[in-house]
Image 1 (tube, one colour):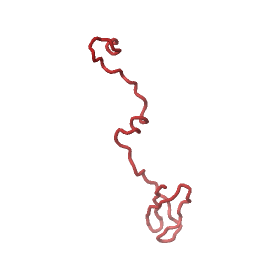
Image 2 (tube, one colour):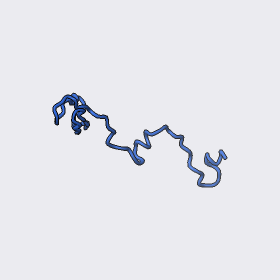
Image 3 (cartoon, one colour):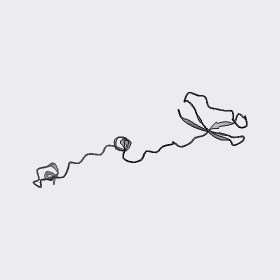
Image 4 (cartoon, helix red, strand yellow):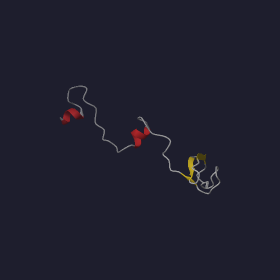
Length: 83
């Protein structure tokens, strides 16, 4: 269940509430009782860092793969033939 942040426009009371997606937004302030309790917009609580699946599989487009360099030195691989 997501956590939503609310703030009262009348008294300035602010609190986080754990609610289902299907729950109706809260309107009554628990502190002063006024009907000016509104949901705030906030940033996501996580960041994707490092070289996990999201960076390697879904980030950006697909880059063409280059063949490995020739290890034999005889010019038999595709990179030696092209040069």
